Image 1 (cartoon, rainbow, N blue to C red):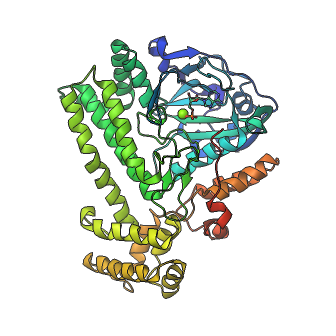
Image 2 (cartoon, helix red, strand yellow):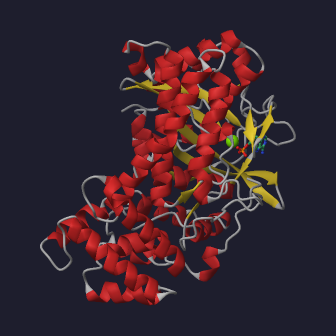
Image 3 (cartoon, rainbow, N blue to C red):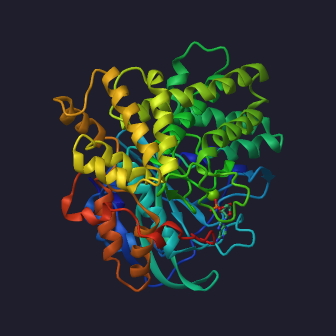
Length: 492
Ligand code: AMP
Ligand code: MG
């Protein structure tokens, strides 16, 4: 493990033509204070944990110092926002400081909230404390849930004023990922008719992130590339749907080409199970509602396919797109099968999975809480407790009969020697602790008053979401009513 000065910095993105980026220098923020840091993220690129409390970290995070071998840039990209093409996008408030090579991987260090860039448009280039804390906590929580995601090294608060609906303070997050390349990068190259640039970008991404394709005896590597991106994206959607994660702004500029969860805005983990839940209050049509996410990913992939048309034949791309629903469903049903404690071929469990979700909707059961409790449903007190939570007792009773039948068909039974094994399996996929909006909000309110301890505590709990951690039981409780109706501002 190394300190900041000892890391192996590389500038791979700068090997690409400079129409894809602009050199920038972060604009410093004043009086930085460390809110929270993730040692697990630091370990990814070989930074030692002690360095997180170092003054250098604060100086880097506040844009006050750059290391001499960095060449910071803002990336140019475009994208479809709420269905409409926007040619004017790019890193408007984020700076790719440098990249670090470590253990055969390369990690981008991207400072979000670093000030104006050529792509800032009317924005101020800043990020506020509340959205920075939410991004930090959610990135690291999703990673602990084994969901592919960009990571966050730390979040820093400052004295620099930033104006949104009211005066707030500027903050930054250091986002860490193997790539910050989005679907929107490909749209930029293609829709501005820069075919050579598009090809160069594809070759770069394949070489760095899909190099398994290079050894394939292939008819057209760009078709294979599209297939690989589609597969990763379908698996990501299955992950989100199975843990009740609503992203909120699935514009194509927020879609990672390597299949990470990317760009955290008004996201939410579901409380009461409502499939058409909309976490983004500016999304009046529900374009990005929870149950639309897999379809929207498909739509976004169609935009990517269109962008790849100069390099690949339409028929092949369309054939691949047609496979998306089955790849998503296979992955999704596998995950839901595990959540229910069932084993074997996921497709055979489709009916009990749909039955369970339908009952949860009718009964307004809390998504994560229900699945975690389900591992104990053989215990009469848990069965009674879940039943008592239901708005429709008959729906619950009918479902329970069906669930017992599904277990029996699966050579399992309640009140049997299978209970412990099933519970162990289920507890590895059904988290006890999730980043509920109200928990994030409590931590943010304390932080806005200068007390960062709740952010740090929540971060610690969410590092082990599947563990009992009984001393924190109250963080796994059902949310209070006010916590279910929180409106998260999009002005981040
Ligand atoms: P987002 O909604 O965060 O995905 O951002 C959409 C676009 O707006 C991206 O190009 C961002 O860089 C840009 N953007 C968002 N907030 C700001 C800001 N405060 N200042 C400058 N650009 C911003
Ligand atoms: Mg974005």
